[in-house]
Length: 223
Length: 215
Image 1: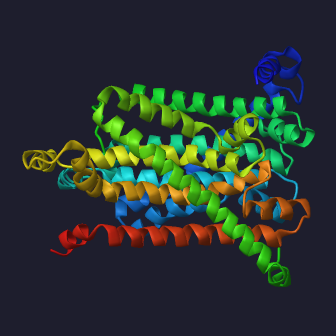
Image 2: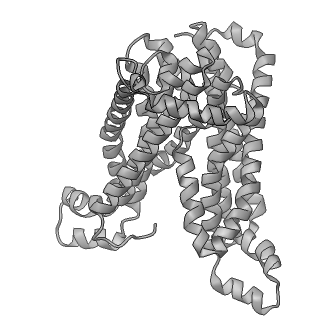
Image 3: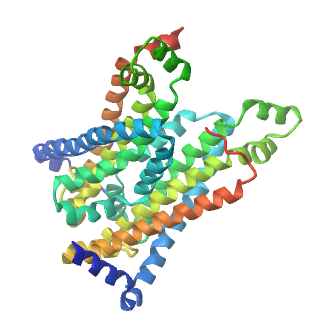
């Protein structure tokens, strides 16, 4: 056990492991690229949907059940399925990751919108604000903390799942996990797993730090 | 991409075995998760100092990718069902712990004081007053944890287990979509049925919430 951790430590810090096109640096960049791009695309789709559902109150059933469906969807199956359908392109990775990220963003955006005090909304309308003014100047700012939580949750899930991209022959940090499993090289497998976990934890801490910095002036309201 | 129906007809036995093994892994994990998180939640609820620590720790565990958790457990428990169950249990812990603590928090102080005034001892208050009243929130956690565990079992296919997840690797290796589609559909169905059963269980266990709603 001790030997294993020593080898793992050596693997993680060795210079040759970090360099080159299959080095950690490159794999890390790939992993971040998949994760961030997929989360951005998902946000571009899910945010308007969540805001619209929250603003109009229509389709609430969809918003609530979407998260349950998203949680039940086996991502490994999804990645493999899109891969078999579309062949060797970047599509399977992005489609699967985006599909995974959408539910938590929609649900949390919707939850943030419904948590807005109806009296505040009425007051805004009573002052003669148009619907888009109510949405963007009142509801959105108030819903922002929960929206951020949804984005964080989505990003964490996506970072974790991007590992599976390597299973259908793409790059990213999952490469080490699957190559290691194939070569029965436990040190490499563990190295990949540790790196993914570190990326997930660091990104989550960074986003929660950003969230705290952005909303420092506002007392935390427990939902 | 077409579904080869004859493959499904030829493999109903295998599919049944895989579904049962899938369900067994998920349910064992949720039960273990409950067993571990209940006492921890009571501690986190009573001892304010430990609360942040326990919840923070479980949050960090949650950010670790599932494949990484399974792989990190390999030196401990190897390519076995135990690894699958421990890995899944770690995931269920986060949801179960948070919801159980929130559930206990939601019990009105007056109710607890009334129990105390009637001379009910602390342990009895916990078992007969606090836990039943916290049940709706705890059950919400159990539902989330169960659905999540059912979907995550398939990740364990990379460590040689994984129930229905084996259909994904099988379909991928043979470039044959039917098992993959069947696997995804069965996983979703399993999650749906389990969730519906848990809703029913909660309905049966908490008759007082119904009375309140109808009044």
